[in-house]
Image (cartoon, rainbow, N blue to C red):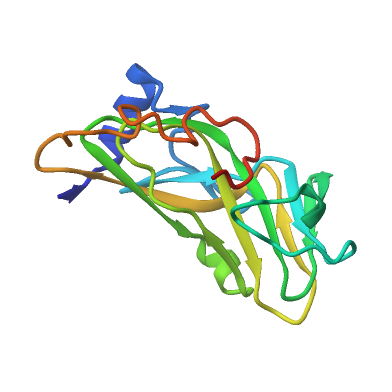
Length: 184
């Protein structure tokens, strides 16, 4: 399984709409970088945030998730409280080929500030906006900037196609748009 280069990412995005909208090359002028890099794609975070709060004293339960667990913020700068968490989504919509698995790593600019970005792998033939999980591990409020880079996706080609893709098994997060909450 090899990591795929910028030429492949560009071709797949321009001919198959794998990443939409696609930005060729890294944009850096005064922003946290985003776009196509040597062996990955740095995605942007959209200005839709769900910041976790304890105002209603609800329990976070992945089997019965309550929207009372968070407050919604549509903003260019999201402030995550100390030792707290927020959900967001990518600006980009992804369409993953059947013979590719995508993993995501947070950007070093955020990691060096104690802000961790988590994303589960994008499976073969999954598509949608990627829901991003931001953890503020610091004892201080932390900022996340909308429409700027948040994380890098690495594309890995398998030695052969899988027998059953995410689309084949009708995965519950297929085609998600916007910030998508946990589903059972």
